[in-house]
Image (tube, rainbow, N blue to C red; front, side, top):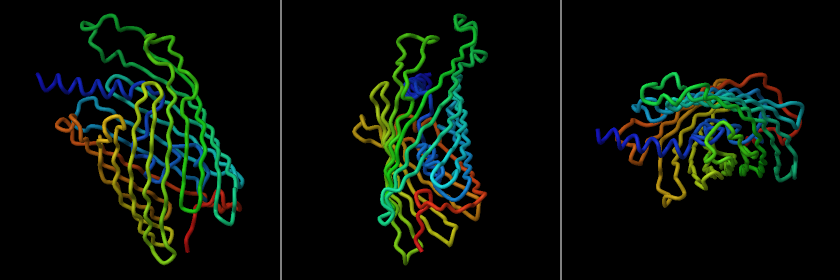
Length: 318
């Protein structure tokens, strides 16, 4: 009984920290060849229609632990414009969030000779939140009744700067205050969160090996907390195909930068098919109660068409 009570307190602390957002904070999905999940500014960069399907199971072994499924697609229109869409379904115990994000990006050349590009992005978000009270025991809490459902919309804005292999993306999510008329008045209505994603791809012209260190910083305005992902990937290229492996660690910045999760990643791209896998293990008090978090990504690239503008092309080193 004591262990169950302790686990309940731990879970509630996580739910309190992450249950207030209208969109689900990024896990490691963006590292699986899908930075579009971090910012709309990546929409349309590349020569294909890019589709990614993600499935994430968190804290395996804990009953009713969070699960997430997401589908994203982005593609280029004309030479300097990209559009994309994201659909997601997130379940955490008896709470459920699902919604869609529709994105637009415009890409500009700052200096073609030095490969400097600027991208601007805008997203419209439609989110729905539901408490599945049909799973509650009415004898325990008869006051919980009716349709506990709310719908909200919001916007994201961002920019992306690229200079050869270096990239810096900034994104502001949920920039409008949240409608809390149907909820407790003590719930925060400022749900803006900010992501800063930066890194560099390092590859010489004589090598098939590419190194990519990167970091993702997330700040949540509602309670002032923030996290940082520290990532490292290594790719082995074979013509247009590649294999990659890496490691990622997430830290809570207000907890002396102690890693909360850490784990390996791997993946491959062969022809038009993409596969990625990520595993994360908790390093906090939740460790004895679960076997970690698993994420699988499947992807497909098709309708290849070269762009006439380098601002929407992937950087190629021959």
